[in-house]
Length: 121
Length: 119
Image (cartoon, rainbow over all chains, first blue to last red; front, top):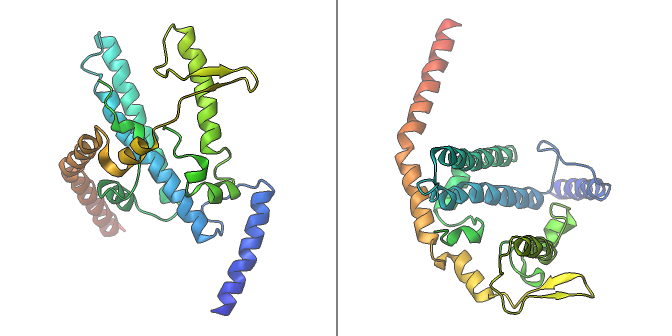
């Protein structure tokens, strides 16, 4: 147990040096558990915001004045879904499943950008 | 409110900035956003609904009225005008999409069996 702790604190010192030097961290690199948790929280929160953000934008599709503009807005809303999927994939590389993140959202445990809780119409 | 609570009230900021996950504080990001947006809105002839909004010549930055942090807390904790509607829409989409996820899984499983049989 002590050996593990010593190893971890030695690793953490090396890790902090890398951060201080401006190195980038890859998902398979060693990282402190808290760092991994913060990244998952941040990235999944961003992903949820993209997905929830589709709703207020989507409200405007029926009101876009022409077919051309409806198509443009549809594409824009679909873009948000794409951003969400990229972000969920990025978070998955850090060791959490998409189902788990989505459950956290549906159970109200995960947050998303609070501005989407206001109406746009 | 887009940029989260005041720096003094932001539970994760210190840790995130220490690790350079976050490079600018909530208040700093908010200030930059307001400076950019006010100019843009004015150039389009729009008025920002904040009677206390004024330009500070010294800091070359826009100052706003106090943010209603009680409202902010209420909205992030589920009490905003659309929280319920948004979550309900996601829940419905998730439940109605279950058959698609089931179909994908069944297809993958069939492909796997086919591959194993062929090998």
